[in-house]
Image (tube, rainbow, N blue to C red; front, side):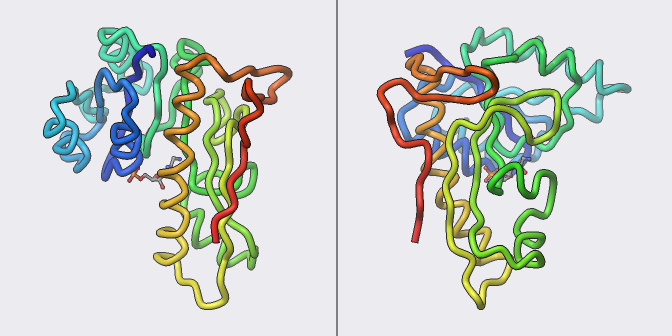
Length: 204
Ligand code: GAR
């Protein structure tokens, strides 16, 4: 199987799930030196790098430095895992068709931030998470897999977030493995998995 570079900004629990699934992780790169997830990667003997966005005057300059760091590891897949940066169009184009993101909502609902609070405020009865290919539009792009969880009457934001996060850790490794094994087919913006693996999970 070919390798992947994972981009993180913080805790890195999705990165950890990808590593623990036994996927070939060439490196973990963060835009923040204090990202908690970096210590986990170091502990696992995985190469790490920090490209600090604060060191660059423009988004373009930061993205160019980030691309240089990524390309040094020659990955087949770039996996965004809680990477909290808006990406320039040219960066997205460079990795088009080989960059995945995980988002904590059932896209296209609740793109952007504060998804759990917004789901509670909207009164939705199902919430969840999505792995999708990255395109120029934030939190859009062809959907690879989604997991749905119930929103329970007494949920607060933390309870709902935890229920969703557990499913993020299930679907991201699955999606990354499909990609790395060459099993994802994108046609007209829709993603199919060779072998008819289910692209949806329902969690209690
Ligand atoms: C995850 O819930 C992920 O879905 C979300 O950030 C969290 C990162 O957690 N991603 C985004 O908001 C991207 N738009 P983690 O660092 O523990 O993986």
